[in-house]
Amino acid sequence: MDRHHVVVVDDDAVTRAKLSGYLEAAGHRVSEVGDGPEMFALLERDAADLILLDVNLPGEDGLDLTRHLRERSKVGIILVTGRADDVDIVVGLEVGADDYVTKPFNPRELLARVKALLRRMDSGTGIDQPVKRFAGHSFDTRTRQLRKPDGTLLSLTRAEFELLATFVAYPGEVLNRDRLLNRITHRSWDPSDRTIDVLVRRLRQKLETNPKAPELIVTAHGEGYVFAAELSIS
Image (cartoon, rainbow, N blue to C red):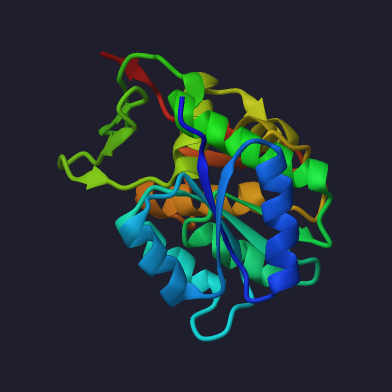
């Protein structure tokens, strides 16, 4: 099997070299670029499996680049950001990043995040269930297709898909943030982590008639979230 191709995008040569060294030692094929134009030029020549993308880049920053990447590709995206950049993390997840690591990063944590995302991409999350219908929506976990009641196909990021697949697998059950986060990123939740709240907000925007008064994905205050829709299987 071919090695996964990981692209490191960072304007700091020292950081690029460190990241590349960790990834190559783990058996990945690695390319390095310093900015967005170099990244897109590389991707035209050589498709990537995963991109480690620094948020603070010259010209178009990592958030803008994430948005552009998501418009044209399902490539895995892990943002590399500073610990103080909570707003950037939230925005990055909203525009389609799959995960993030913070500087200064722990090599073991970095490689664990990369491994987990690549494994999920290779396996299709391992979910093999029938098509499920709720509130007029049709959700096929095998093909990752979600259709609105009028038949319109809704686009889901990988993290959105995994979160919705978890909800439909446990309807009516209170799922806390730690359990949800572990299902989609394989890491433990802490009180400052807003990943799940961001993803729930995105799903509500796509599924709910009134996202400000949700009826499908309901908040269990102080506990987590409940998928409250009635499911039917076909």
